[in-house]
Every structure is written in structure tokens, then in C-alpha cells.
Image 1: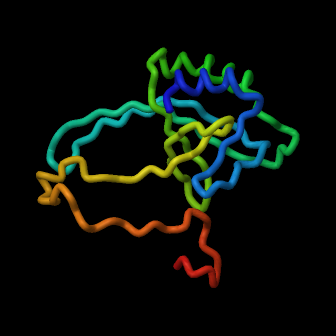
Image 2 (image 1 turned 180 degrees about the vertical axis):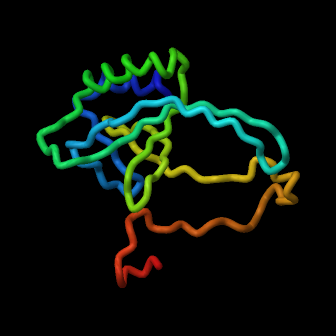
Length: 153
């Protein structure tokens, strides 16, 4: 999802609901604590210089149970963030605290904003000798925190 798309969606929804990849909703009293510009300038494993810019939203929940972020308030925060983001239609990356800080993509399903898992990848598979179609895939681990006896460790 991009900045333009979230602004359009916020104009259409009655409430701001974020859903985790597990299907669980963030508590209604969450805060958007940061809207920022992340500029990543790096060299991939094949020696190619790359740059990437995304808008970053940090979501946080606290003991402020009376707090509710209305769509108009979120639009106001995004308008203020234009000082930092400019008017580029950047992709959005979401940070949310779980067992560790997770980074997610963002999409929309109906009236919900859904955090989508992000994965790493080799950007230069030919330089690393990785076949175009690798039979190896990482196992899907549960996104919920491990608990004693839960079988995830």
C-alpha cells in the first residue's frame, strides 16, 4: 500500500482497524507514534549499489484505553508528515512491537488495514550461485510469541 492509497482508504472508512497476519486485531487504543521516511542505501551481495525509500509507520499500544485514532486524525498526521515524506507516493512499511519489533507491509481488505509479512531475499542470486528455481523454502513459523510447551521452539 502506498501513501496515496492509505489516504484514499482513510477517507472511506469509519474506523481505523489494523489486523495482524494471524487475523488478530490491534487493540482499538493503539497509537501511530511515528510517521517517517526511511532511506536505505546499500550494496547487495552481488556488489550492486541500491537505494530504497519507504514511508514508515510505527504502531504502539499503551494503557490509554480511551484513545481511539479516527480516520480524520490519521489523515491529519499524514498531512503533517508531508514535511518529512514530501509528496512522493511511497510504499508503506509498518513497525509493530511483538516479541521483537516486526516490520510489515500493508494492504487493505474491506475496512481493515492488514499487516503483511515481509521476507528477506537474495537480490543477486546469479552472483551467489543460487538456482533460478530453488527447491528450498523456509518453513512457516507461527507469528505468535512462543510459550512453554507450545511446540514452536
